[in-house]
Length: 265
Ligand code: ZN
Ligand code: FE
Ligand code: FE
Ligand code: ZN
Image (cartoon, rainbow, N blue to C red; front, top):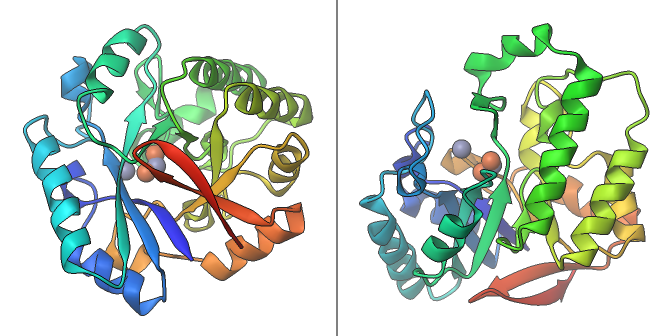
């Protein structure tokens, strides 16, 4: 099986060496993995309050290290991915920068809303001061912009706004339907991101019903553990495969030099 969402210690909030991630992938019987560490926000000129991405000078070394590992581990295919923040207004700059590097795939993610790192445990208390209905609406509006930006191959942790368990009472299905249609229209793939299971919310991204809606709208899907430590590589993979099959998926997406292909589940 596969896991296309692995981080490295370069982003300053992950542990272990890249060799240890590879070793864990082998131990869990994975055949294809991809690193997708956080693209340096410094290159985009965006300065968050807490450092959450690699330094600009690390990017080329990161790519070289993934390449080296792929060459040295003949039994595994190791792809070069990257997780990039979608920052409204910086689309052209992001596109120009991404075109310089030989990425196999680009995951587009939201971690910031108006400068607030809403996925960071340090700022989780801020949810208490929000109108959750409005917050979710804002989040899905931003997600819609991300979809239309055409910058990415995969949308990362698509409903990560639920991470700390704050959810509005209202029915979220209309939002999910709208986003799934936009994913399809813009040829984007989603991921079942198993990290949510270890977050306070305690479930995968996306929600079970959201995943079904993605299937109904024929949105392709891939698998990512969002590992920030070696032992997290391939976490909950059997459950993720089960969830995908239940939602009606029979295959998962892979990427090479930004070309998509599929392997059966
Ligand atoms: Zn991270
Ligand atoms: Fe992320
Ligand atoms: Fe990630
Ligand atoms: Zn992530």
